[in-house]
Image (cartoon, rainbow, N blue to C red):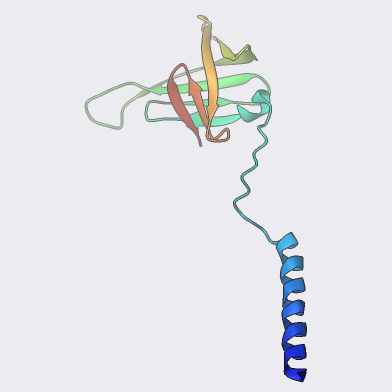
Length: 123
Protein backbone atom coordinates (compact mmCIF):
# COMPACT_ATOMS: atom_id res chain seq x y z
CA UNK A 1 0.00 0.00 0.00
CA UNK A 2 2.84 2.32 0.93
CA UNK A 3 4.51 1.62 -2.44
CA UNK A 4 1.35 2.64 -4.36
CA UNK A 5 1.12 5.85 -2.36
CA UNK A 6 4.73 6.70 -3.29
CA UNK A 7 4.12 5.83 -6.95
CA UNK A 8 0.94 7.94 -7.00
CA UNK A 9 2.64 10.97 -5.42
CA UNK A 10 5.62 10.71 -7.80
CA UNK A 11 3.26 10.47 -10.79
CA UNK A 12 1.25 13.45 -9.53
CA UNK A 13 4.46 15.45 -8.99
CA UNK A 14 5.70 14.65 -12.49
CA UNK A 15 2.31 15.59 -13.90
CA UNK A 16 2.47 18.98 -12.18
CA UNK A 17 6.04 19.58 -13.38
CA UNK A 18 5.05 18.68 -16.94
CA UNK A 19 2.11 21.10 -16.84
CA UNK A 20 4.28 23.88 -15.47
CA UNK A 21 7.07 23.39 -17.98
CA UNK A 22 4.78 23.24 -21.00
CA UNK A 23 3.66 26.81 -20.33
CA UNK A 24 7.25 28.05 -20.54
CA UNK A 25 8.31 25.73 -23.35
CA UNK A 26 9.65 27.47 -26.45
CA UNK A 27 7.85 25.93 -29.39
CA UNK A 28 10.35 27.37 -31.88
CA UNK A 29 7.81 26.90 -34.67
CA UNK A 30 5.22 29.50 -33.74
CA UNK A 31 2.77 29.46 -36.63
CA UNK A 32 1.29 32.88 -35.94
CA UNK A 33 2.57 35.67 -38.15
CA UNK A 34 1.73 39.33 -37.88
CA UNK A 35 2.69 41.13 -41.08
CA UNK A 36 4.54 44.41 -40.83
CA UNK A 37 3.07 47.44 -42.58
CA UNK A 38 4.14 47.44 -46.25
CA UNK A 39 6.23 50.61 -45.79
CA UNK A 40 8.32 48.79 -43.14
CA UNK A 41 8.40 45.34 -44.75
CA UNK A 42 9.72 46.61 -48.07
CA UNK A 43 12.82 48.20 -46.50
CA UNK A 44 15.95 46.20 -47.34
CA UNK A 45 17.59 44.50 -50.31
CA UNK A 46 15.62 42.10 -52.50
CA UNK A 47 17.09 40.09 -55.32
CA UNK A 48 16.80 37.31 -57.86
CA UNK A 49 19.16 36.00 -60.56
CA UNK A 50 18.57 39.08 -62.73
CA UNK A 51 18.48 42.08 -60.40
CA UNK A 52 18.74 43.48 -56.90
CA UNK A 53 16.53 46.30 -55.67
CA UNK A 54 17.13 48.06 -52.37
CA UNK A 55 14.52 50.21 -50.67
CA UNK A 56 15.47 52.39 -47.71
CA UNK A 57 13.16 53.78 -45.04
CA UNK A 58 13.47 57.33 -46.39
CA UNK A 59 11.76 56.68 -49.73
CA UNK A 60 14.90 56.05 -51.81
CA UNK A 61 15.66 53.03 -53.95
CA UNK A 62 18.57 51.59 -55.91
CA UNK A 63 18.05 49.01 -58.68
CA UNK A 64 20.93 47.01 -60.12
CA UNK A 65 20.19 44.82 -63.12
CA UNK A 66 22.50 42.36 -64.81
CA UNK A 67 22.96 42.80 -68.57
CA UNK A 68 22.85 39.35 -70.22
CA UNK A 69 26.19 38.31 -71.68
CA UNK A 70 27.89 35.20 -72.93
CA UNK A 71 30.31 34.63 -70.07
CA UNK A 72 29.83 35.82 -66.49
CA UNK A 73 30.57 38.03 -64.74
CA UNK A 74 28.18 40.13 -66.76
CA UNK A 75 28.02 43.93 -66.50
CA UNK A 76 25.23 45.60 -64.56
CA UNK A 77 23.21 48.77 -64.92
CA UNK A 78 22.16 50.81 -61.93
CA UNK A 79 19.41 53.33 -61.38
CA UNK A 80 18.30 55.09 -58.25
CA UNK A 81 15.69 57.57 -57.16
CA UNK A 82 12.68 57.83 -54.90
CA UNK A 83 9.70 55.55 -54.39
CA UNK A 84 6.24 55.59 -52.84
CA UNK A 85 3.71 52.86 -52.13
CA UNK A 86 0.09 53.39 -53.14
CA UNK A 87 -2.83 51.03 -53.79
CA UNK A 88 -0.74 47.86 -54.11
CA UNK A 89 1.82 49.52 -56.39
CA UNK A 90 5.34 50.73 -55.86
CA UNK A 91 5.87 53.92 -57.86
CA UNK A 92 9.52 54.61 -58.61
CA UNK A 93 10.81 57.97 -59.78
CA UNK A 94 14.36 57.38 -61.09
CA UNK A 95 16.74 60.33 -61.13
CA UNK A 96 17.02 60.01 -64.93
CA UNK A 97 13.23 60.21 -65.40
CA UNK A 98 10.69 57.73 -66.78
CA UNK A 99 8.65 56.86 -63.70
CA UNK A 100 7.90 53.17 -63.18
CA UNK A 101 4.79 51.75 -61.53
CA UNK A 102 4.77 48.08 -60.54
CA UNK A 103 2.23 45.96 -58.73
CA UNK A 104 3.66 44.30 -55.64
CA UNK A 105 2.62 41.50 -53.32
CA UNK A 106 4.20 39.46 -50.53
CA UNK A 107 5.05 35.80 -50.19
CA UNK A 108 6.43 33.61 -47.44
CA UNK A 109 5.52 35.80 -44.46
CA UNK A 110 7.06 38.83 -46.17
CA UNK A 111 10.30 37.03 -47.01
CA UNK A 112 9.71 37.38 -50.73
CA UNK A 113 8.47 40.32 -52.74
CA UNK A 114 6.68 39.91 -56.07
CA UNK A 115 7.16 42.89 -58.41
CA UNK A 116 5.12 42.60 -61.64
CA UNK A 117 5.28 38.79 -61.71
CA UNK A 118 8.98 38.52 -60.80
CA UNK A 119 9.88 37.22 -57.35
CA UNK A 120 12.64 38.80 -55.29
CA UNK A 121 13.92 37.20 -52.10
CA UNK A 122 15.05 39.13 -49.04
CA UNK A 123 18.84 39.39 -48.93
